[in-house]
Length: 225
Ligand code: CA
Image (tube, rainbow, N blue to C red; front, top):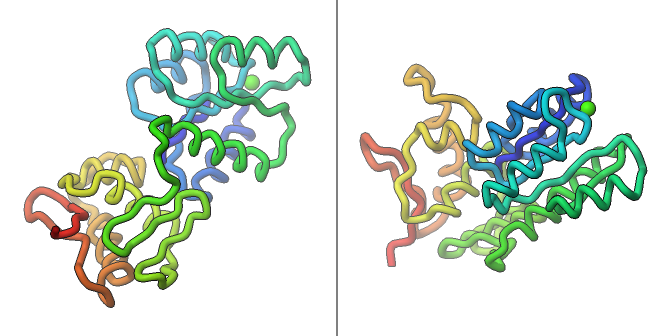
């Protein structure tokens, strides 16, 4: 899942980005409101974490811009003041939750997970499935045929993407941007390597095989039924 962090304070921004990446999210960091709004409107994110006090345009304007565009994406705002008016304003403008600085990272992570779960408006389940494979988004666990499978955070993100779009051939460039937050570079075989590792864990000892290579195109996860 992809999160946009809009935060001008370097230390806080880097800390948030690092922590969220370690928790398995793909993170884009914008250092001011103009960049933040531009990214929020032009790229696909599952959640925005928005500081209120920003140079350029402030967090409220970013939030208004996102809502005016009709985007339904969950927004968590960060405010330095424990001020009722501030919180009310944020929620009235269409934010989904807030945190008062300074906050514990564990608290932020808990809010993020709650919002992401709620964000799947269409009563999307917390568990993604294909055949006997299950990926639990909240507990961040994977099992197949009831056997627990340990994945790295990148492998987890990769499997999550394949499961969310099962039956669809995903080009390497899309996988690169969604899971590694990088542009596809033909010199790197990072995706091939990750797919191979994922297959060893998810497919090698099981039937049917779920992850397929479509030569010259990319990868697809599908059940043959
Ligand atoms: Ca700030």
